[in-house]
Image (cartoon, rainbow, N blue to C red; front, side):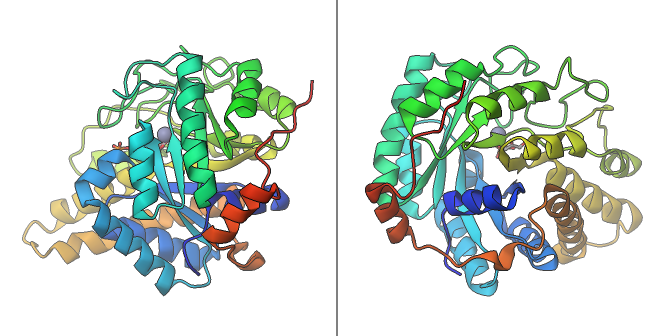
Amino acid sequence: MPLVSTRQLLDEAAKGGYGVGAFNVNNMEQIQAIMEAAKETNSPVIIQASRGARAYAQDLYLYHLMLAAAELYPQIPLSMHLDHGNSYETCVSAIELGFTSVMMDGSLKPDGKTPATFEENVEVTRKVVDYAHPRGIAVEGEIGVLGGVEDGHGAGGTGLEHLTDPDQAVEFAERTGVDSLAVAIGTSHGAYKFTKKPDGSVLKMDLVVAIHKRLPKTHLVMHGSSSVPQDLQDIVNQYGGKLKQTWGVPVEEIQLGIKNGVRKVNVDTDSRLAITGAIRKVFAETPEKFDPRDYLKPARAAMQKVVALRMTQFGQAGHAGDYKAISIADMAKGYKNGTLSTKPEVSK
Ligand code: G3H
Ligand code: 13P
Ligand code: ZN
């Protein structure tokens, strides 16, 4: 299957009542791990790259690896998504390269640190939508600001400082025409999300419910959704790592989100932990080894394991064969003739 639009994946997920994991990549092994997990579980999947990933791997390497994935796994609906685009220019460059969806994270100013005003966010996101939709490319916006900092991106804090306001979410969706909406509900990027198993005082799933009530047909996106499982923390620390005890987003909370309109679930940290734990184990147990394949193979297998588990937990498993690819050119026609709606259904 050619690379498809994330909008198609999310529309199908809404029909089927499941969520789709969006897994971050920086290199070939991570793409291979995700595709093998998708094959193993028969899952449609979103692969996403941040600005940091694009700089690390170089755009063309990433793009051609994604084309290879699409060619090698023709049975898997696969989209290539820009994660946290910081400006109009970044989104345009991703679309020109061949990404099939972009996130315009206008919740922050282009420095990727300073919270933007609502009007600034609407303006830049609308501009990206106006560029993307005539080209058949889907756009994710963000309203509210997540916590944490990853690779210099993020406002910092706990994630409770700029929670999404449901009324603003409605206005934002109406004024921008985004295909999906990332919401701030107390999660943050990276490993250090919560200091104990989160309850409703720090992880605001009630906000997801409230936003979904107002925007029942809008695809919601949960960022910072790694579960940071204890066993992965333990493997890293058992083999010389120095992670402080931490808690992520419990899978059952994500599943509650999926019942309430969450269609895209962003996961990066769990993959990082799986990879690092596996590599540390090889280094600690067999320090004489120096062929990168000796540690990259187990690293890849460890990431595949956690990704396959998340695919099953999010409900996308088993759905790869449900539908045929809509070409990006046909997506463009759909936006033009209105069959792909960009006007949210709003209820009181
Ligand atoms: O949103 C953050 C993702 O985990 C990507 O992180 O910017 O370090 O590649 P990165
Ligand atoms: P985690 O750090 O929880 O994996 O979140 C990843 C993410 O939201 C990427 O956009
Ligand atoms: Zn994110």
